[in-house]
Image (tube, rainbow, N blue to C red; front, side, top):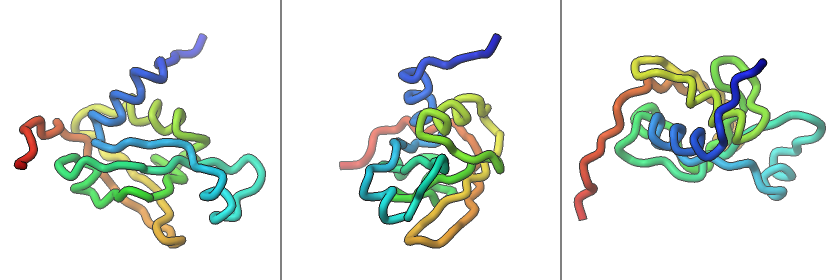
Length: 118
């Protein structure tokens, strides 16, 4: 029997662990990347500037194709993989930024909960 994490829990955990909000690519992104077939990915739509993801260099608009050398099928898959990480773990992301492949390593850390200066 498999272990399933409800998507709403995984979404919250992904945001809290890495400080990123992710979603599936839009049809425009799929066309732009010339994706066909079963290849998958997820899009980073927001990065909290105080988060481990931001400190590692993840940016809004990055297309995540792999995490830990495992292909990303969709946003739900990436959220689930992120939810399995513990503080101190290092996640390696393969991303496309402006059409160029990058590898980014992010260390999971407690998120800065202080309010933002206004």
